[in-house]
Each structure stands twice: as structure tokens, then as C-alpha cells.
Image (cartoon, rainbow, N blue to C red; front, side, top):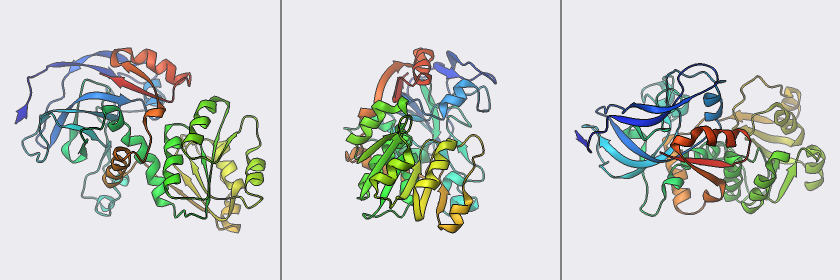
Length: 348
């Protein structure tokens, strides 16, 4: 078993109980297992899915360390691990499929019957060290920063939806929700060479909508002051749109999506709905509108997005607005809740 000098304690953000609140405290180091590696975390992003965990509105097994968008250096290597060595600069996907169920065999790891997700079901990367299966780890090129490596996960979450949509150069597409995943969706859709991209946000998204323009959105709409359906009808000369990507996960978007899609259009849902939503199934039937959702990504898609980032095809750094040491998680979390940041990166 290969490992660096032993460190018995580490700083971590721990969700210790149900309800609001979390602790920033010293905890025991993770123990190395034969098929795993331990990574010294250098950068870890706060994801939208971390917010309800830290706020206590999403149930997780506790005590648990959240955090799944990360990169760092390999600190320890299990005896059965091949192809990875101490000091390798790496990132890791959160999806840990069993490899043996029907869905894993079909390459649908995110639907695994025995799915485990780093930072959601088991301890994650809001810590100085994190243990992950070696099979989830990918090496970074020498010129790839840890911040870039920590950004592969949200890019891949947006990419799975875009990849599944048969959009072409003739299509007009709308992205609802210009958070990090929505802004990545704009870039990924632009890579498909589509005719037109429209990005929709609210008064809280003014800066994000400006970024969307820089990332390839032909039009932006502020739904707080504009009628989204009327504006899209104007932009498209009444033809409406071929594809909607919902990166918001809120009822007004589900309603608007059905109104702006043309006959035979496609509604792709990336944003996670925490409550049941109403959908106009009458239009689904009468206009043969397609509806589908995606969750997380596969390791193959994670690799593809790492390639996009390292090739400079997807811009990541303009989204990173704040950096904090891990010990200041309470301050960072307040900024996230106040929507004063786009992407916050923590540095243990």
C-alpha cells in the first residue's frame, strides 16, 4: 500500500444532524481501501445541490461531509489500484455505479440500482482529504488548474441533456436558468452549431444573462420584466422553438416550456424538481412534444467534458466569482444564499 506521511485529522465541513446548520471541525482522515485512492483536495465548488444539504432541507445520511465538485493531488493509493500514482493531479466524478446491475451494464451508470454519489450518500470533498474509488478518477493535464478540474462535474451535468437532444444547425433553442449549469448549457448548445440560442433568467440574473451573451446566446430575456412567451414569439417570428433546456427546476419554467415549443419540439429537464410540477400533457399529445430528463452523467460523459475544458472549448473561469478557504464555509454559504456569486470555489 502506497501512501504519504500519515495525517490522522483533517478539517472538514460536516452535516451532523437534520435541519439547519453544519459544523467546520477536525475529523478523522478517511481510511484507505484496496480499490480506492485518497485525494488531497485543492479546489472544491459549491454546487446548487449542496445548498439544500447544508441548509437541512434535503435529507442525507448523517454525519456526512458534502461536496462533489473537486480536484486535487493523489495522497494515497490502494494496493489494487493501477494507473494512478502518488502526486497525480486529478479530478473525480461523483457517480459510483455498481457495475453489475442492468443499468450499469447498459452504460447508464447514473440510473444504477445501487447508486452511490460522493458527497451525497458518502463523505465528499468539503474536506482536506476525500476517499473515492479509483475508477471514478481522471488525471488532469499539466496546464489544467485545480479550479478547472473542479468544474468538470457541472459541465457534465449540463452536457448529458444536450448530448441526448437531437438538435441541429436549423434549430432554435432556449435555456431557462442561467446558473452555472445553464451557462454551461448555452456553451454546449453553441458547440452544436444551432441557429439561435435564447437564455432566460430573472432580475436576480442580470450579470449571468450578460455572461450568457458572451458564451453564445443570441438573445437574453429577463422574465421579471418581460413576457417570455411573447418575446420568444417575436424573436422567432411566430415559429417558436425546437428545444428547451430547463436548468431551473421551478414550475414557471415547466409552464413556459410548453408554451414556447413548436410542434414536434423537445423539452429537456436538467434542473432537479423538488416538488411535483404541472405539465400541459394536452400539448404533448396534440403537438407531439417530447419530454425527457437527465440525472448526473456517465464516466464517459465526464471524460468528454474534461476534454472540452482542457481544449478550451468550454469557458469555466468567468463563472468563478469567489474563492474562500474551507474554514470560512459559513461566510461562503451566506454569499451563495444571497445570490451574490455565480460559482464559489473553496480551498481546503
